[in-house]
Amino acid sequence: MTERVATTPGLFPLPDWAKETLSELKGHQKGDLLSGEEGREIVETYDEVRSELIDDQVDAGLDRIVEGQSRWDDMIAHPLTIADGVETGGIVRYYDNNNFYRDPQVRTEPSPSGDVADDLAAATADAPDDSDIQAVLPGPYSLADLATNETSHDEEAFLDTIATFLAEEVDALGEHETLFLLEPSFAENPPGDGEDAQASAAIDTVADASDAEVVVHTYWGAIPEKPYAHLLDADIDAVGIDLVAADREDSVYNVQEYGATDSIALGVVDGQNTLVETPETIGERVEWFESQVPVDDFETTYVTSNTELFYLPENKYKAKLNALVAGVEVLS
Image 1 (cartoon, helix red, strand yellow):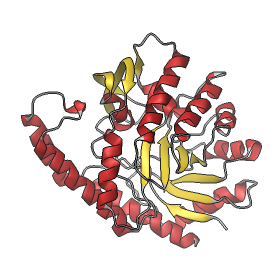
Image 2 (image 1 turned 90 degrees about the horizontal axis):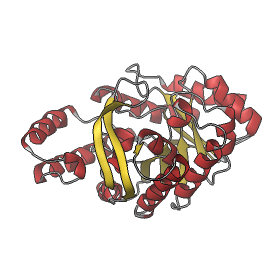
Image 3 (image 1 turned 135 degrees about the vertical axis):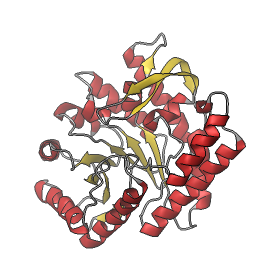
Image 4 (image 1 turned 90 degrees about the vertical axis):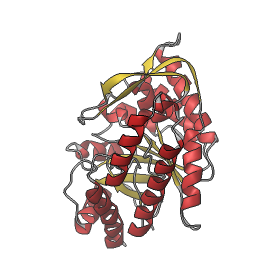
């Protein structure tokens, strides 16, 4: 019997009150805020935001609680932008989603900051004692894809460097039930021949650092066949599949042709569209996928949004959380 788990890839929108407060505070603070050395009032504001985001998830009834990543101004590049050995460059566009972020320029071997571990520890303290905590990090392939390599390493060695960096960040994390590695580049800028095996090995390096269930969540389209087949070689528990994307049939074909991990993550709620899916729609998307693939039962099906919920207004983000939980209830 498949266990169905309502969860998200994290990266929630800031509450409306926090946007105004942080804008004012950061306008008065000099220096590089991306260094992680925010002033006391900014730190306290983010602490308050984290508590609120956790309350949102608890109120909705999600099965996994994430920290919310409210401090990730640079989206999934954040853990690298604040690392030693990395300079934050100018504003660039990541992917095709009309959002612009800073460019992490890696000068030397990046050193883990422990920033993500500290935030996860704070989230664990804020969450109810019986909560199942989910950590969120970028995957190594996407993070290497987004970064500018200014080291002496070639691209293959650079990917290994990023994987080692992330593995050290994971090793610093406290106890967590699940680890989501966000890998949109697998769909948006997929690895080519040879690089696909290296990308899988890099993910394996990061996954091996965690004792939790590891989900490699891909989105904004389907992974091409060869990268998908190589991804299955990594020691991971689940691959995330975007069922909101127009080419979801390609994702189904991959599973039909090459098989699947023991568990699966299905992006069935649109993280960039304010239209809130009904529980029935969510249930139908999960059941449609299950009816198409030659798998009797997955150990766990993670029912999630296809992308981060960062792009949504605050009220719609909360509505999507509730929709995910209601969709799982429909399936039970």
